[in-house]
Length: 266
Length: 266
Image 1 (cartoon, each protein chain N blue to C red):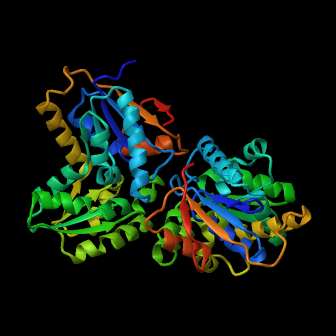
Image 2 (cartoon, rainbow over the protein chains, first blue to last red):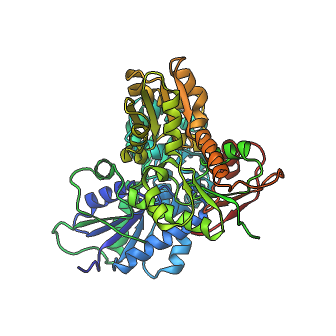
Image 3 (cartoon, rainbow over the protein chains, first blue to last red):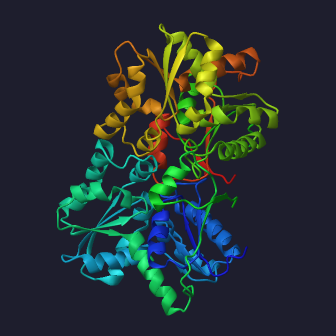
């Protein structure tokens, strides 16, 4: 089977399926090959050099499968590895940081923007940098919220424990009176109900998965790379490990029916 | 530098330093080479085949450094990989499950034993099996407590969030009226103060790190493998990734001063 013309999407694990879900809603006829590096998840707690090494391996695998464009559906990789990936590979590589930053600047009335992301993403300074590219008056308050990843993967997305964790992470953002909170990790949209109830009513939550899907669509159309026709595109799921709760997790992030899954070695 | 005669100890991350700490208290003159696979941590949420592959890599690295014995300071690896490691390598390989199981059976008056461990350890059934080897009348209630690992790594070891998580995990054990709780993951001893306040006063907490250190000492003496002399043995720390919070985490698990650390590629 040839994958020429498919969109390649990868993430450290299954969280990036929130990006796939948004892509399929906007670009239903695109074929998508998704690679989740579940054997080495999470990336967000690890050092930049390790994340770059893993990202090179994931991209190489997708390129070998003949994808036309790679969407890095992982904030941590998008924060620390995009330049290196663009040097190594000769195809378009789109990340999630810039779309999220642009959407945040558009949504903010006061210019006070909050960012929740993994420790590695926050340490990289990628969001404040990308936001500064879009607006010179924005003030960014960034907070690492690392526990939201394992909480999401365990399915603890409502109840006291995630609520208290979310409240603690939002503290500095609330004190800075932000009017936008960027969900700077593909896992965080699962906490949207809690997040919405813990911020003031006029605070806008920006989901970088949705913002990215919109920009991918624009990019494909501009370049004439979009898939022709109206037939539904297929979805292929590749993972490096099949975790115990794979199906439950994949369904949580992707919604609806699951395609077949193939285990690959990078 | 030769490492012949050192004890090799490995874990998925830094949690196994709780075993090193216990070993150094009992066997101060042993040299110890510790390998933490921090680039691929955690193991406890991953599939058995992936954990076995990683465990083979860690053991191979320690064997190449000439260690005399390997202590698997990781409950997940001890649960799913020991037979495979013993087939592949021609040196003694000691795990943490059997020592913890024996200590639990000794400590229990009622035979009702609770186990908290990672999802992979619980799924393996290793603790109930090991406990059944020691006592035919024991009744085991085992509960996966996966969030305690990231909570420990983030340093959230006191306060509301870990207390509520611990309470939720202890629920089935309390309802089963266990009189012993095995801390079946090297991270869990960090929650001892919370655990003690959340169980009835007569419930004994069994730390598999301490139980393992005692059995390693007996094993070395029986085999005449213990290090001669009374000079303090050195400690070498090897990691596959240097995480952002490495020093803080290592100090939390090991206590006291940190030795130099070397990053290795497996």
